[in-house]
Amino acid sequence: MSIDLTSVPWDQVVENLHQGIFVIDKNAKIIYANSFLSEMLGHPSYELLEKNIFEFFDNDSINFFKEALNATTDTIQQDYELKFTKKDKTTLSILIHITPFFNKKYKHIGILVAMQDISARKSMEYELHAKLDLQQKSELATLNIMEDLQNTISALTQAETEIRKKNIELQKINSELTSARKELTFLNEDLEKKVKERTADVEKLLKQKDEFISQLGHDLKTPLTPLNILIPLIKEREQDPKIKELLDVIFNNVQYMKNLVIKTLELAQLNSPNAMFEFHDVNLFDYLHDILDLENTLFEGKNVVIENNIPAETIVQADILQVRELFDNLISNAIKYSKDDQVKITLNAKRKDDLIVISVKDTGIGLEPNQIQHVFDEFYKVDYSRHDLKSTGLGLTICKRIVEKHGGSIWVESPGTGKGSTFFFTLKSPNKIVLQNSDMQTLM
Amino acid sequence: MVVDDNPDVITSLKIGLEDASQLYKILGVENGQKCLQLLKDNIIPDIILLDIMMPQMSGWEVFDRIKENPSWKTIPIVFLTARTDRIAKNAGSFLGEDYIEKPFDIADLKKRIEKVFQNKNSKKMFADNKITSNR
Image: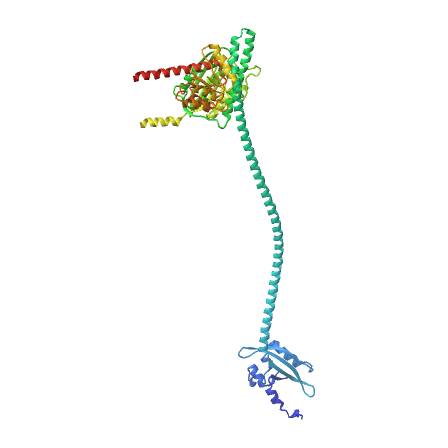
């Protein structure tokens, strides 16, 4: 069954079409608008009809219409998207399809415009675009971030590798250092041990040396005793003066040996760290007054005058036995080193701060400046050319040690050969003890 | 009485003191044990010259034994010593009547012995006086 198309009420069809339809004549005047269009644009048909279409559209849209109106063939059928501003100022997006109209004689008589409201679609599209855009942007951002991250990661990886390398190097250095430290510690311990061992060895050797000297000295003294006693007896009984002379030579050598042994022992004892000293307050004037009477054994038959000019109240802190030794050595030296038989020895003492400076002045052979430098050296003898059996070369060394053990100093002054010499030494004066005594007296 | 482990020391003292002066009679003893034995046998000398460094029994020990005994303790003792250190000097001079260092000469030894006898006599006199005054 077929429908006769001529019987279809086309005007009604168009009127009810769900699409906006315009018909515009050659002069752009609106000659038809369906109700859907009126509704879509918000203008009732009376506002549209007989009006120029250009009144309702903006300039860009007008151009589409003008083009279509000027077209000569029906080939121009085009879709356009354009904007339409409604009376209430809301904007519509419209898709238009323009078709030129021709009469039966193919004369262009107007255009047919079909319109479709695509605002919803458009806004969706817009949103979609916006979303897409955002997505793109975020993707881009993500990509950027990823790239950055990758860069960072690769930088980090590189850094990590380098750190690992450095770490390995450090570990190597560390282990080298540790082993070096171990070695050093070991060396140090070894060294310390060796030093301790050596120190102990040296101390042991020094002790052995002291013991050896002491033992040797004592062992030598006993056999010297019979020689010392018997030689003078033999000399006494001997009549032959030549043999008497020979016995003198032997006896002098025995005496020399005896002195050497005694002085060596004394020096060894003074050098020993175990040397014992007992310091007391000694009135030097009184003490010397007592001992000078005994000194005549040292006089060797010379005419010796000892003048004791030491002030009566001179008190020193001293070990009596050692001070006796000190004066014995200095006085016997003064006698020994005088050319003639007249010897004058002057003793004096002066206070200097908390020290007492004691002087022993003689009228003997005196000393040259180069001799002054050496007189206190061990085994130094002023005159080597003389075979001097009276001097051991140890007397002044012993004096020096004794004075040093008392915390003092010793020196010698001489104007030169033949002009005598003066030995000086210092001893401490017991200031505090004197004060304490006076305190006690005031208390009493 | 001379107590010394070195016979040469004894010999030289005999020659030096006994023969030269005729004042002394020397009894030489070579060790501490013999010295004490002689004392036990009631051979009491006027003075003992005592060596310190002797093997087996030292001079110190002999000294102590003699001074412990009431009937021997008045015998004067002079130490003969080769030691010069302070302990020996102090002990010698404080414990004994005197000390003399080896090697010594006869003149010095004589002086010291005479001094000891003098002291002994004066002490004795002092003691005698005391007794008289008590009476």
